[in-house]
Structures are given as structure tokens and as C-alpha cells.
Image 1 (cartoon, each protein chain N blue to C red):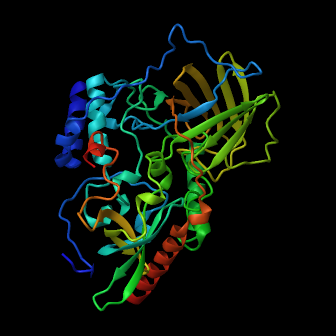
Image 2 (cartoon, rainbow over the protein chains, first blue to last red; image 1 turned 180 degrees about the vertical axis):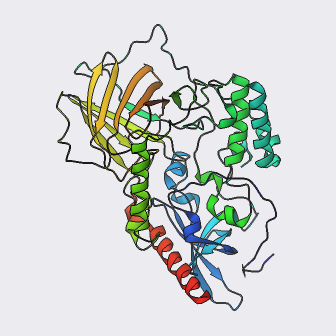
Length: 136
Length: 334
């Protein structure tokens, strides 16, 4: 799929019970569940700041223009502890962000799933699940 | 009891996405740190002869403060039960399992960012609360209910997102609710560094960059009129245990329904090279009785990283802008 920019309104059928929700802030207050999106773009910078990281990426629109987006991630402290540095996500990397747009319609999103565009591998693969980190 | 546990377990697994279980099932059980002192171990001392709690510690655990109702009177897991509980809790917490959008957005980003831990406490207790024996926070007293009502009334005076002051202390980068005291595990950056000098113990809390400076020189508490976000701590040594009494809390930073009149007693005991036993007792007229929790902290080798919070808090702008959008939409629908 080489389409560079697409807004996808997905209907997810799976319904779970009460989920543990927690983060530095209420994500539902900042991002809009009715605005899911998929962004494919090139990393411009990765702000490794607290309370939340922000990945800035340039997304090429179908008409050839470019839009700068900001994607919110977690605290960089634990990534540092795992050996991630500024160089782990260098400028120019093509990534795909599957997430939700900001409520106010700004070009900001929360990055639910982040993958490398070249091979579809997950960025920040693994997780806290025992064994899951092994399948990087 | 065991049956309760199994029922609880399977219901959780069904909820939490069975697809992950084959991977998780293959994970080898992790070593649990021993919490008791080895006979040959000699507790370290600082240069001035005080027991040394110095070092870096983590309180990360998936054991909840309160025992899940389904575990009823079961105070301890067996090793096998602990492993089942760990697998299922980690699976349930996994932010990579996508769900319906209204909840999906709340689960935020890739699971890799999170560090909630994947083990229960090494004592295999089913709750951090050890007293009362039901593992639950005791009921609020009449006074406690009154305090709650007053807090709710103050909250109603302003809209949920009129300005930064309407948002939580955490969102405003003022305090993290688990920074305490008492200090509780959170979902990442559960790290602490203890440094001592004659007459003082300092605890650096990574989340969200606070330092507790605890005098151990016998001084009295501050006057009652002085109220601090994290209270006024006064410490002393009982054998190898640091006992810290904290009073003078602010009314605006409650812990599980506590009032500004809480008298918190914390005990820090190094039980071996790798374990710092942390226990706290909440004495507060807001509850019908005192209650106690225990969290074994374990040594870590990694450094703590600064959690500068205000500097990068773009989310506050996003939250307030989102609220303005909601108001505009509501007005248009009228």
C-alpha cells in the first residue's frame, strides 16, 4: 500500500470489559475516539521529553503538499533504561502511525501502533509481556 | 478459595485476548528475590554508623493495593497460582491488544513504553494491604465521608477543564499520585534513590522528580498551620529500621480517601543486600480503622533519569483545546 496519507475510520468489533486506564493524563480528554487515523510519514525529530515523548513526522498528502504531524508517546525514561537513545529513531526514518487525532482537530495524534514503513515491523517492539520482548 | 481463584483467572483470560497466551505460556518463570536475610549477611552502615539504606530501589509490582474481591480471604498465592495471575494480569494490561475505539484511545501508545512490571511481590501476597486481613482499604468514617463531600463540592464549583487549575495535580506536573507519601508503584519509572548524611535521609523519587528530605535529628513537626503537598516528615531509627512519621498534609492531595489529618507511619528495613522492606500505616480519622500495606523494594543497577515534567507538557494545551471543541459542539447542538 503506497498511498502516502489516508484517514481510516475503523470499526473494531472486539469489546472488552473494564480496562485499566492510566497515563500521565486522560487520553480521552486530548484525543478523539471518533477520529482514528493512519499516518505514513518521515521522522523529522523525536522529542525525548517528559511527561510524554513526541515524534514529529512529515506526511505527504495526495496533492503533493506536506503536513507536519506530532505523535504522542510515553515517558522516554524507561526506553533509555532499555538502551534506546536518540539514534534509535533517526531523522528520515519512514514510519506508519495507527492512532487517534487530537480532539481540537490539530495535527496531533496518539500513536497506538507504530511500525516501520519498510518492513511493517513494529517500532518499540515487544512489551512488558514475559517472552514478548524476545520476538523483536 | 482455590476454586475462586481459578474462576477469576479464566474469566480474566477470556476477557484479555487469548491470542497472546501461547507466547506467554512459554515464558520461563522468573526468579523471585528472597526477602529474608541470609545468615552470613551483615547489614551495611553509613560512615557515621547509621544503618545504610543507600542505593537505588524499585517498587515495581503487579500486586494491587487491594485484594480483588474474587480472591476473598486468600492472603497468599502458591507459586503456581502466582504464575497464572502474572500471565493473566500482564495480558490484560497489554496496550498492544486493540479494543473498541472509545477504550482504545484511553490505552494510549505501544506497550513498549509501559513498565508496569510482570511479577507479584516476592512474598506472594495477593494484596499490598496486609492489615486488615481482608486486604481492603477500610470504610470511610462519617468524618471521611464529609471530607469527600466537601472535596466534590469544591470540584463542582469549576468546570472539568476551565483552565489548568481544574485538572489533576498529575496533569499539571505538580505531583504524581504514587509519589506519596506513601510511595506506591506506578506504570513506569518506579525508581527511587536513597542518600544519607548525618541527621538526614533523602529519597529521590523518579516519578515525577520529587525529593523527600527526612530529618532524623529529633526535631519536632512543623506547626499545625503549615500544610505541605507531601506532608512534614520526621524520622528516627529503631534498630536497623528507619521509622518516618509524616503529618501536616495538604487537604488537596488525598491518598485513597485520606484527610489532611492523616498521620502516616512508614518503616524502611533492609532485609538483605537486594531487598528494602517498605511498610506504611495510615492513621486517619477519615477511616474507621488504621490500615497497613507492605511493598518489598528491590535493588536496581540502572541510574534514575530526570523527569522534567512542566517543560514538555504539551498535553495540557491539547486537553484544554479538546474541552473547548467539546463546548463548541455542545453549543451547536442546542
